[in-house]
Length: 172
Image (cartoon, rainbow, N blue to C red; front, top):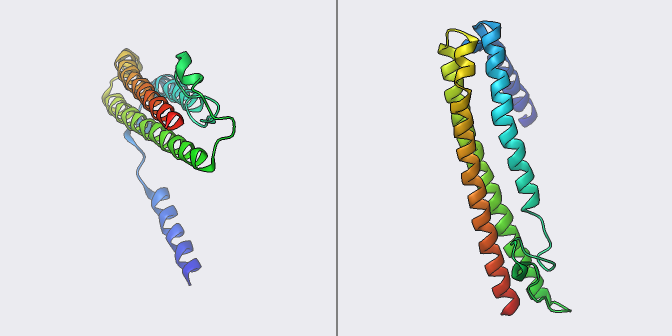
């Protein structure tokens, strides 16, 4: 019974998608739509790719081996030669909390980028031609850059907190 309900729910959802009206920008001049799509792909897409690289570089380390900091102290904090299970658990918990905080900052970045994208799309819907859309690119780029800078500051702060807590655990 439950399976048929989910199948019927999917059928209703599919019918809504098929009958949904086309967005206004899909009814625009093809050049305007193409300009908007290219700009969004360049600006938002590049920002998301940079953020994904930052997340890969700032998550998933072995906290017994190193910290995230650039200074020599964070990378070379003394680790016992035979760390206890409690120490390993504490560091694993700290690392999981750090990775979760980074993920939260990434979600915040995505939210800011989605807002900027929506505003840009709304402007593009009202634009008379593709040149107006292209002229608005700098505004979108500024918003994306600002959101990305905030994201990188937040990552740096999380890394510093991680390194401080790691050092305290290792000394403790």
